[in-house]
Image (tube, rainbow, N blue to C red; front, side, top):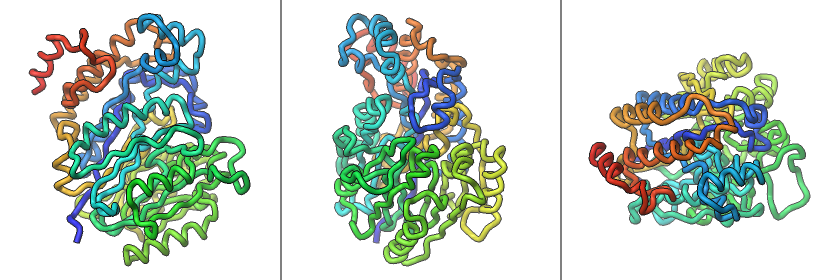
Length: 467
């Protein structure tokens, strides 16, 4: 019998360069808000308030640090020369898209950081971690090396955690992480059913494909991750996302589907094959978990796909609370959207385990195309595995206070894409991240934290103060 386990949310923190550059083709919100003014301080504080809400509800929470932005290392590798300020100036003038990509704070959406398999599902009984290569977008693809480094620092006990490198970064193996993956189970510690959702089969030119927006996740990437994680093929399903939904702006599966334990909430247009795909999932779940899967399927009369994308209803977090009740953490937009609000009221009043909805203000994240579920990486852990996680990233009242004060010290409350060229901005960002690595006890994490001024007496003094 497997030991009891629970789900821990590792939430990404928006970085100091949170901006609306409109880099994500196929993400409607990102495209619509291109080059408008952002508020990095509000973005970070909104994310922190969501973490605190879940923690207060009894859900275990942890944080993932932002990536260093602007990413001067990438620009230098691509042929720009000079000091940091000169490199940024050259890049902004010669390749604006690349410059903005290297300033993106998109790593905040931790659902794309990796796919994680719990020890209960892996043949070798260990937690398997594969960072996503995010090969479809340059501003996300450059995240993979640092994401892998961060995850190795946090899940560092070799006896419990297996780290696989990101899949080779190409269109055949496009991997977008757990945003296209759902694990269903009776309880977290028991063997579950893994559902991988792909937008296209890269080996086929025929069949149904989106025509307006690209399909990012490939079946080949999903099957490779399943093999690496030593998952039981009989308890692993590969289903295709509906191409029409992708063309409506459902760029990841978690924009139209969310699951937790024995509950699956989705739209009728979530999967190609519709009812047949759902029947396959139900059948395998019943065989493996020996109980019925509770499916809550909303159709277009209840909420059109366009309204689901606008409200981010399905990007709500579905979580199990300590007394086994379930609730949804929904974006505030759902309360203001008549379609979404009616659906959520119906769900709470219906015959299913979900008995509450908590609305959260994530306006800054949503304007860039990411809701509550985008901001977290779900990791199922036993008590022993949890004890081997790097503890300073685990959420506590003390960490909450430190992070709120840190954001107020370092984050601007107004940022336009043009502000990214401010010579002082890279200094501000590095100072913030340097202090954060002390708060989280991560040591030298970023490229700029080499043997120079950032390893100064002042930094050592700050470490002693936090310790």
